Image 1 (cartoon, rainbow, N blue to C red):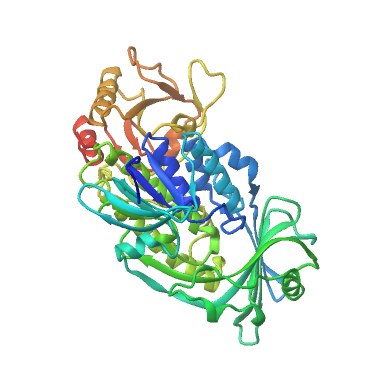
Image 2: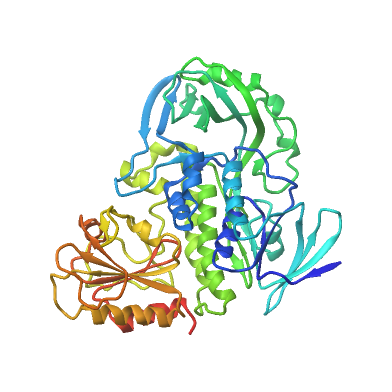
Length: 548
């Protein structure tokens, strides 16, 4: 058996979640290997919805442009019951949100992430399967099955299991995976259809019987290409694979016979709100849905993310996007741990922050699968923000510093997503910037907002002292940036990057009325909001994140 000690982190599974974990580690200079048992990328349009929050993450990584060019806009959803339109849901978001909802076949998402990862000299080791592992106080010893039928032993400091619903990592750790399965089987098909429904709208067409129960279903998600959709439908009896699931977890694509065009056409003939002929079948399968959640997202030096940690109905395209955020949350913390620079509870915060998110997503998607999104009691705007994953937050996190109770201003609280805004101007640029332009490619950022109309010790000296403290306590990892209220000139001798909040958008969206400091984490969430910004409070927060 060959031995290899060439990486700090081993990532098992090269779907969107594993690729994100590897990319986020590599762009921070962490050495990692990523293995996948499949010999090639599967050309299945499995997860297709890209949430605005995922696009924001890709913006921070420097990956968003190729994604925007490859994807198609998701405008909304048309809902029909027994042939009658009962709802038209437009996917509208507030103007400060920089990205809309999009659709992109999973294999395209994987291609983009794989190409991004290759920039750092890391390639997927295909046909390579994690067979087993053990861990001790210093690292993880993994046994890999290699493409030629041999085996390799690899020693790494950490292992991340992004190996799906049937995860070897989860099973080896002995994590509980409680939940249940839906009795229905579905079929998926990637087809073109020539109906005259408006482009960019998903379709949910149901049939209810005399008792009001749903007994037939067609869901169509638009894909790039003329008249192209990924359709999901109930399975006809002749394609049922229920007896041959063979695994205790029936979730995802089943083996056996896939639907053919005539199976798809039969459903269209029954349920489509407009006449349409299906053609150009690219791919089809039968799949089943379970809903399960692990009891913890890791153990020691081994972690799980994505489907290895949570599975649930595909309603609202929450699964892959949630998994990508798992990977982003974990990777920046692992990067500090690899450098022995992580605060004492930093790695434990991955479970504390992400498991409640997984629990909420599983519960919500199960409810929406049964009743439809429109049955949710929230007001439409809140529902839309939640579906876009813009409301995900960690207010109770052990590494988030609660806001001062006296700070009753509006705007995001610690743990919440740091929203974008526009209208930031510099002395040299002749065009306004967005806040995300300032955050792109940066990791830990201290944003210092200065309202020059209030003079209580917030001059250049104080701001520079805070920036110096942030730099020192983070081991040089935190960058500082000053945002100035429009009007007064910047304090002399500032010597920090400074931008003017020319349209007042930052002040409005962040609810600031006086000088305030914001710690923006690498995953785009606020770690702290300090008003007034005091050195001891900032040092206390940074001590949770960084080891000195």
